[in-house]
Image 1 (cartoon, rainbow, N blue to C red):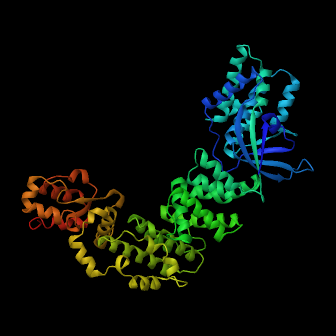
Image 2: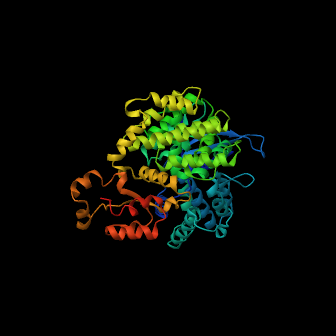
Image 3: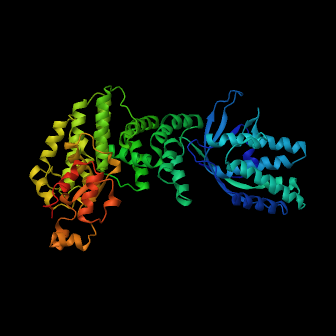
Length: 532
């Protein structure tokens, strides 16, 4: 690591040097008030010949081949100070437009550009068009919102105001050149950029989860290599999953390798990914990102999006697998995701056939629903996360059944007798999503074309807030409400919850007869004289 106090003039004038903003960085976001404060500080020192400290700029040094020169270029990949360096370039360009002296104009051109009109600053892709047009005096061609254009225009207008007040542009330019920075250069092989970055990040506005991980994966590479990794591996993940689901995916992905051995706080996930890189993909960031991309592509099966397993053909089989996975998501069996991802990848690679994969998904659904009915669906992470490893090399439906059959206590597979007993007393409404799933499955037994389930909600027949008329009907209403209000016998499905609500017994039956096509409700309609 080399830290050097420098003026902006010396830093920008470095021979054969370009400044690259890493491709994974977020857009330029400096606001007008930040620009106003910077310009005020510069104008202030233009009158007294003092200097002003701008802070530090940290970069990783790479040497890259230059087609137009026999000598390699120095590329400073900026890991801290991207916003400041972009703003300074915009201000310098604004100053250049006010300068009349051709000699000074040429000098500024040398700070903004390398020979051959190659811009010295290389922004990220989403900022590049705006920055290039500003540097070409074509900012008027920009469409839409752009902080780069807006701040450049702000600088030009503010400079006009200062000039009208009698300030000289040459003095403002001189003050700009006297701005002080500390340039911190890191060299690969000698310094660990990630350690330095973590130290910087800990003292400022800390980056969040995904930003920290994205930085880690690509920070040590030059700009061309970063672009390749970003476009090939990271962008597909963002496109497939979006920010929220990408966060969830990374946790699920790490569970494949680390099972229950980490907590899901952002920092913990970040450090676990670093450990995963070190332990499972040493010195192979591309291998790690390729592995993440493959699992990320498969992860779409949990999001109910179009997805086709590579090299696995039968459309009907794939549709069936999607339905079984959708069932698991309906009942919120998220802790099974790492195991299912491993099975799905085995299926893609031909290690697990369709029949076994389909039955495994059915077994998992049955297991979770049964445990939920019996009131034991929590604390399954320590059981599910290591499941793939516990089954050994022979991952199959039979192996899963044998393993679950041996489970005892909190992880045991409830038998039919336990289910029957639980049905009589279980507060089914407390796990509404499992309750809805069970009621739908009951409906499907007698109704080949049940209504669209997204339009249905779980409805209490005897209301949650009953009138006295309802209470009179059941007699000992206190006991009834304690023991039966939320069990399966008092629950049904309806798309008319608002209409049914606290209607009287007779009105509720009439509405069910008129609007409901569910066979499930025949139980209430056909037992009008005996219910209660």
